[in-house]
Length: 321
Image (tube, rainbow, N blue to C red; front, side, top):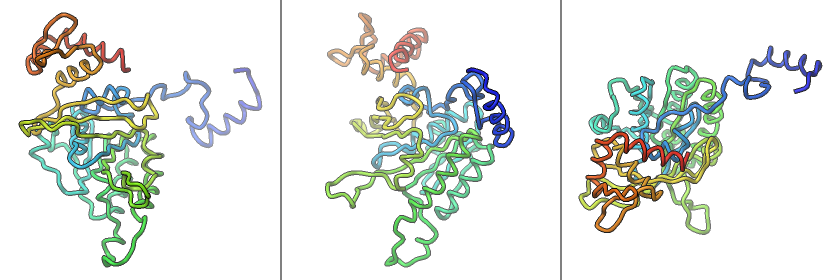
């Protein structure tokens, strides 16, 4: 940039009054040169989100019932705990099963749990945790279960229209401002509902339009297949909004009940979807001309042969990242 005495004087005054981030001259002078990311707990989700959830941002995970939304929140907590990060789980629905959470990798002894009695209390607790900077990850389960104190106090016949949406809209304006400064990532788990205001049947998410606006990343989960042994199901994850990486990427992973995600299984699925590995007759997986065997044999092969697994993983990342 060409030197400009008037601009230099104004810039110095602005920076002195509002702080160093008020004016930044070029990327080299920015303290935040790249988007930092936190692990999602899933190789498939890491790939389609651009390397993980953006740190210090608001993330929305939504979908129909029984698809694995809470599971996605808990595996993210487990992955961040492995990096010695402090995590909080706001159990709005009061359904957290400690035994199940431990089976999928969560350290429940180091987890901060909150069970607020109303929406105002939940949002105030979240605000204070984000402002403190002492918590790295907050998972709120779920937005749809947030009930205002006014609604709790009133009779069933009395209306409290849009109270939840107004509360959330106000809260997200504060969360968005403070989260980027303290680096606290907020994951909002949300559900799908039928929109009764529309003439044609369509699905929407509770909490108003503010969540769609403030969320830097929105992840939709769908169940595509329930396994015949009833011990798990296949989940398709689609990024419907991403402000920090290319959107509309999707991937599938297998959610096996009472078990953590197997990274090699996820790599195998994504590689086969991208045609890096070919699935041929009889359910056999082939890497070029090499037969890796059927699914379980192929997964065991990848677990044992780390160099082969890393080679396939590198090919996947080259195509999608």
